[in-house]
Length: 114
Image 1 (spheres, rainbow, N blue to C red):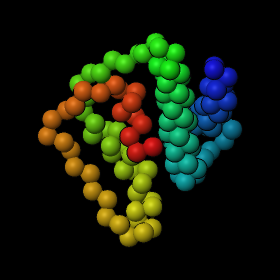
Image 2 (tube, rainbow, N blue to C red):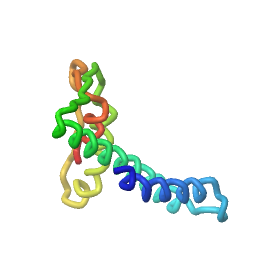
Image 3 (cartoon, rainbow, N blue to C red):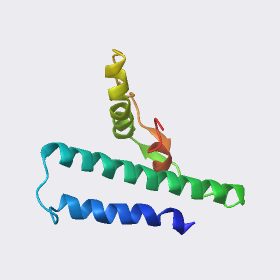
């Protein structure tokens, strides 16, 4: 299963080289694109981790450890991913913070909006 992570590790290495300007200067737009690529790679690594967790659950080896957590960050990130479609369709997207934190597994919270 480690083979699932290998291509993303290579992408991350090249991404860091570009961000560190090792191949020359970047425009602001290119820097923003690289940031979005980095976010997508991080998200994919999380999804792969979730797939591996599900495989453990199916094998009868659960690894669930809920903890109190504020979901404002993951929810804001999910809203940001949906923002271009909302703007395109002239839909107002509003995010409201819940009154109290909930208990969930931190790695699961990252999959909000996927």
